[in-house]
Amino acid sequence: MEHLLYRTLIYLHVISVVASIGPFFILLPMMRKIRFASESILPTYLDTFRITVQLSKHSGHVLVGTGILLVLLGPWTWTTPWIIMTLVIMFCSLFFLARAFSPTLRKFGEDHADRERLVRKLHRTVWIYLFLLLAMLWFMVVKPGMWA
Image (cartoon, rainbow, N blue to C red; front, side, top):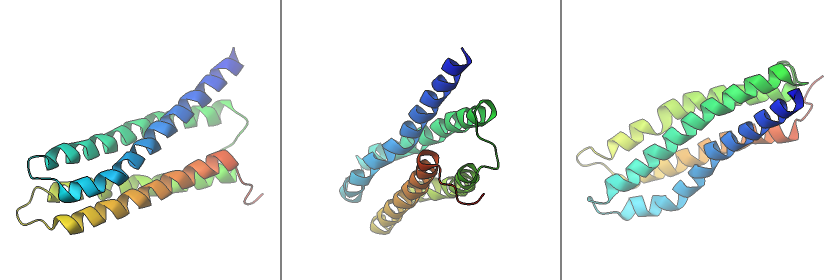
């Protein structure tokens, strides 16, 4: 029974990774649409962006919860190098996520907002965040022994 619980936690952990990372790939082609959208359509695209960020945040809660349980119930310890590196990147991504998207998305609603500059900033921000998420995923999958 314990083995089934652990495998179920791994499954939930992987599903939450997919839900955290996947939606950001949808945002990349949306940048062009945001750049050229009419004022009446723009809020729809921006809402999609906000929903994606919220989905990633909530999936992250499941990801962290299942990750903690997997360490507590599994063969790994908190001092395992790949877990430490994943946690370091995770904390960096939390600070990044808190400041990255919402302020920029709010600026779209300001008078005389430079939409081109804001879209470039969002595009760069999505790629940086994807890099952070994919780096964490790499550590979790490859589990490199960096020091011992």
